[in-house]
Length: 333
Ligand SMILES: *[C@@H]1O[C@H](CO)[C@@H](O)[C@H](O)[C@H]1NC(C)=O
Ligand SMILES: *[C@@H]1O[C@H](CO)[C@@H](O)[C@H](O)[C@H]1NC(C)=O
Ligand SMILES: *[C@@H]1O[C@H](CO)[C@@H](O)[C@H](O)[C@H]1NC(C)=O
Image 1 (cartoon, rainbow, N blue to C red):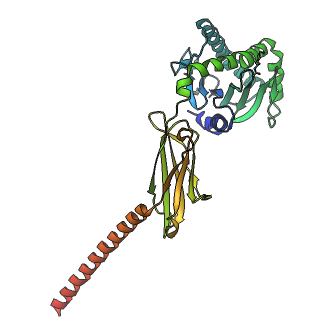
Image 2: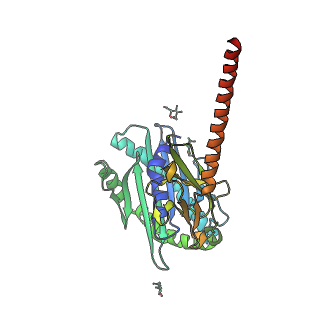
Image 3: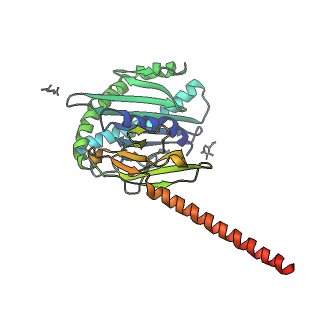
């Protein structure tokens, strides 16, 4: 599992980050992770996403790509599917061999981690954008642009040697162009159709408030839980009236077991300032009717009631103890 840190550092921010920021809702991205532990040990695993949904996986142990959704094949004919599978199998074999060659040529030590991120996004009926980037040891090194391989802006000097070799291979460049600029957009248009129902699914969130462990004396941690929503993009903020509270802390969006998402958003406030605050949730499934939950008297009085109870109880014990002791002393006297 040595490659995981690199996926987290390099791969996922690209995958998740841009899928949330991009204009089109369903960019198609494949991520390939290849680890070369030493001269004899290697594995290559690949994953494919449409927007935030994982639709493919291709593990090193398997000869064939796993389609994770019944609609993952899109509108590809069986013949085309076979042809692509064949191309990718050949690619995986030669990739492993070529990287070993490059490592030898460059005199680089093992272990090596190589990642590829490739895909496309359909922007309109006639336009799409495709990309293919590669990283080594977690840093971007090169990409495919138009008709050739080019270096990433901050790439180390040795990348030039790799580019010279890659750019000499006309056949591979033509195949990459065909896959990126012709097959990919066509394929994505198809899969957007076959997966429409699931891709455009909308599930409304539920939200509730609670208090977390007190961050300090006289302070409260207000927690707003938002759960069960789909798709993933969501906006949650602690507010006072219409004013967003800048201290709002957003957790990571976590998966629920049923494919929906969960998010926890907190605010650390002085106990006296909690009332009048509310948690506001915006989500595409709500059709503009935001969820607003107020940190009302309910929460305050429950907290106060518990505190009072503890104080009274504690006081009662202390008094009983003192009273008992006193009686003991009295009886001694
Ligand atoms: C290569 O790496 C693998 C995995 O880390 C290890 O199990 C194996 O013993 C190594 N082989 C050599 C020849 O160093
Ligand atoms: C990955 O797959 C290749 C090709 O099938 C195989 O030679 C290699 O041993 C596999 N690696 C691991 C770690 O299973
Ligand atoms: C897309 O291309 C076709 C054929 O070239 C053209 O008829 C159509 O108007 C174009 N659509 C858009 C939205 O540009």
